[in-house]
Amino acid sequence: MFELIGLLLATAFFFALATVASAILGSLTWLLVRKRPLAPRKRLLAAAVVIPLASAAYIWLCVAILPGESLFGDINEPLPNGYVVKALGKMPDFADISDPTNSWRAAPLSEYVGKIAINGPLVIGQYSHPFGEFKPNPNEPYFIFDTSTGKTTDLPTLSALQKTLGHPVDLAEVQFFRSPLATRRRRIDNTIELGPPLLALLLLVALIWYSRKRIDSPNANIYT
Image (spheres, rainbow, N blue to C red):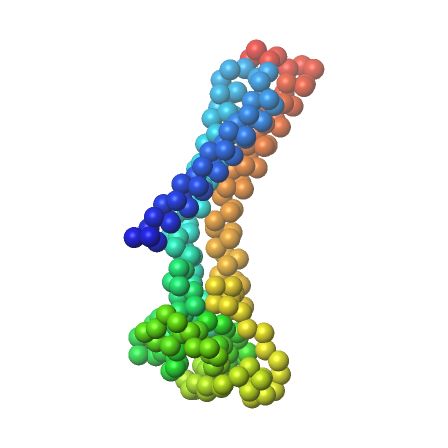
């Protein structure tokens, strides 16, 4: 329930910002085309007001349906050999590692995951909470999960983890973890989400520029 309320509030705020952007873009457009005849001026003003609101609706829809995106901020980052780390947006430190294509293929972990990193086929991390509990242990252990073999090794301390790996490791909290395997996916998602709104805005700028060029032309007739 609270998650849905948070989504509604975030959506309302997002569209409120889009409304402000519509007002600003409409005002700027009016200042630039106020000398144009009524019909083209109305079309440009309508476009300036609609573009931010339509773009906000389009981006909202993309976040709702694109893979790897989530309106609730849920986490779904790919790991080597088909595994993913998943967690609810409101509970990022209660993450688990599994294969979404095979419900029987899950990492044999001792607890929920709170921090994570990738090192080749290895997934390295620190536990956050024992299963079924909300309170973490005073000193949560670490783990190495080999995605090639499906085996997990638990280690009591960070120094023991780094000694086993043979080098230092920088772990990221799950909510801040960005898998290098998802770089292409994020680039595609960003292009899909931002491409059409930016193209619409550039088209509006081009039409305003063309309109003003006609006004500034010595042979232009502003009444036609």
